[in-house]
Amino acid sequence: MAKSTAPAVAATAGAGSGAILVTLASGQFLMALDSSVMNVSIATVAADLDTSVTGIQTAITLYTLVMASLMITGGKVGQILGRKRAFALGCIIYGCGSLTTSLSPNLTVLLIGWSILEGVGASLIMPAIVALIAANFGRSERPRAYGMVAAAGAIAVAAGPLIGGLFTTYLSWRWVFAGEVLVVLGILVLTRRMADTPPESGVRLDLVGTALSASGLALVVYGILRAGSWGLIDPKPEAPTLFGLSAVIWLILAGGFVLVGFLAWERRRVERGEAALIDPAMLRNPLLRGGLTGFFFQYLLLAGLFFAVPLFLSVSLGLSAIATGVRMLPLSVTLLIAAVGVPKFFPDANPRRVVRLGFLSLLLGLVTLLGALQLGAGPEVVTLPMLLAGLGIGALASQLGSVTVSSVPDEETDEVGGLQNTVTFLGSSFGTALSGAVLIAALSSSFFTGIQDNPAIPASLSSQAQVELSAGVPFIPDSQLSAALDAAGVHGDTAAAVMDENTAARLAGLRASLGVLALLGLVAIYSVGGIPTRQPGAKPETTAAGDEAGAAPDPEAAGSS
Image (cartoon, rainbow, N blue to C red):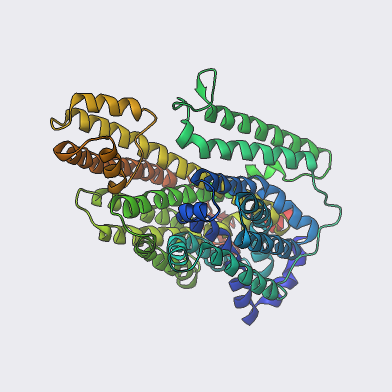
């Protein structure tokens, strides 16, 4: 099957490859835009649909669960139907979901349109994008192609607050989803120009494996998403518990247990020569493991950064959604420059070195922001960190996709696409949950210590606050805290002292969150040793004895031998 892609790749060389790249990048942009827009429009959407903020958060959680749990299955569907057909089918389902969402009169219809239909569509589109790049671009061209597609997704995340803010403020959030329908129609028209590999004969969907992978991933992701509100191990007040521990840890453990069973089931089916969702032997491939590890840390750090920065800009400083989005745009500039520039000007660059330099730039961005968050800091302090972070993410985007896909024969790219997107969702969920948990813990500790040691705040008020806020001090703007203090009858110097302590505590929480992310960035630099030292498709260097020096194994050769 691997050889069948060669004519297709050759046929797309030239002018057509640009249109194909725009098509796939547009698909990736849409997939990443939705959650980013919805996150800044929660209150507006809730009011428009006559529901609660919790209801919209439930829709966001369900959307993430549907996508994450079906990614591996979506990759397998691409093998059964053909990659281009799966991509087109996903676009149709996604477009129907976007149209339904734009017209939704209540929360139930929103759940059907956005959380379910768009989630199912995305689970078909995203693995197919990975496979279609492999089918339409030669190995030497893949770093540029994957870099552009990954950059489109990251730019959507960065630009989402600005787009959501503009539409929510001046038009309606519904127009975002209506616009997505038009974009999907354009993508479907351009899809005809893409080359495809034919459906693989004899491939069937493993229904038991589908159920095991979907339920295991859903349990893990849902547990991670609930960690902030329920507590990871020690339960928060009124959170569900089992044997004195938070339900979160049991959800994650149960999900892990189911996934172990899934791999055992898949291994047995492969040994029997039966249809399987994935071949667990793939996970023993060091190049693939290195690429997936890089993806996990990239999206963990990106999600954590995009959790902390908007909180600082919109809550601490009181910027609007539009102003917050504008302040985050520098990241998109350097991200695009690095994602396009590295493959163009350094086509033979050492992938492992580029990835490590990318994580180093991202680490420097986190550390710079950590040092800049001081009392009195304004929105301008995020500019340099955003530029550094964008440079790092762009460098990672230029290499990781090509590394993972090129580590296996081309006929296995669907499975890799499913794994890759599953890992990115796990990384994003973990990064958001970890950043939130650390932030609230540090915020609470700093606030309670501050009001306890502040002579302007009565001891009785300090004790009352610790009792009522035992679940954690919320990260709220000054206006909301001022209104709460006024309603509680706290005025004058006491109220001012509480406000000052809250301001300092917010910064302490943000700094703690960024500090943990920086430590993980350091870990990421040393965790990607499995990434090869030469570009996919590059001729291996040979020693005088004729042995390859630092060469990565050729999966195509391995697959044909």
